[in-house]
Image 1: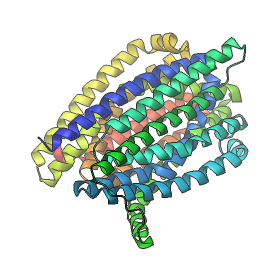
Image 2 (image 1 turned 135 degrees about the horizontal axis):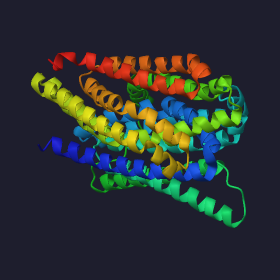
Image 3 (image 1 turned 60 degrees about the horizontal axis):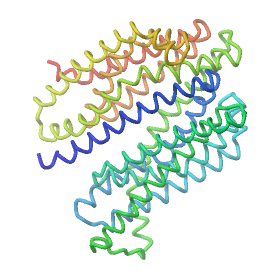
Image 4 (image 1 turned 90 degrees about the vertical axis):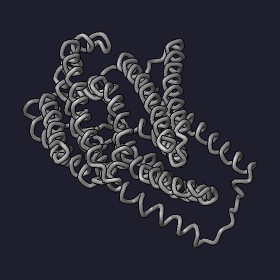
Length: 445
């Protein structure tokens, strides 16, 4: 109990923070949709793949690598080595992020016109590029605090980013309205920069306090001057773990980016003009999907708890405990999914009108309601499979799901419009769930 208590407390902190952040973000999207409209939301959502790709390339793998090696060193109370690993990982990630920032800023027009197929996103990309180094700073520091199991710091940075971003956008909008200026979606992107700056400031303050505390207690005696071979060894260890993780995430995010970029293009092949295609895309990804995904805050929290529990049970060869976890996960996730499906079916049209003033959003919510049981079961089973060490399987299942969705984008949207993509979402999620259930079939007997 003493060993698991910090883990449970940390998970609870992350769970509550994640739920609050999602709650704030949900109403923030309602505000954006009312102020900037469906087409503005479409433009805003088109920039998301660029951010996701840069995060996977720059720091996603390095954050996990820092967390792993810091956890190992902190257990031995070798704080010098832990801070050195953080410093080396930060330098590697920051050098890559600065390169990505320069590339996106300088070639934003080319990226907007040739990759996103929407020239109006170029100024948004230039603003967004400035957030990449700041995101790298707090991601690396968060990795350190995850490693030493102080989840309050990552939780605080997450809350600070969300609150400051939402508050700044509202203040900018209020100020421009007083001056008689027309609000544009650029306001939301500027708010993203301000939010990232706040998150970075909180994380830097936390790591500075940590350093001062250890120095005063003489637990950490700074030894900056080390032979180059020591730093090269640290870099090699970090990169050996970070590179495969980054490649996997980059490949997944690359396919998701292709999917996001292609949807408006293939909607135009269906017969929509550019404005209509962006509006439909904005309604789907900026209004309907966030509402459908809102209850998954519960299953995401359960997934965080399940991974260490299953991992420990597997290391002790406790098959009975794993069997119980698998069965209960499927049972309760199906029940939650069934209740959410019923709620969205009954209230989806009303929610679309009330929250977004969009009948189209209500129609999407009703269609996507059937995805809930499969979405929740798949997320928990993926966590269980990762706990069992079958990370390659979960990666393959995710890739298969994405490829099926892309197939629907290419083949179904030009014929059936956005309905073709909705069918693809349902089919891909059903396939991923069935694959996960098949992978844990021996625990269902």
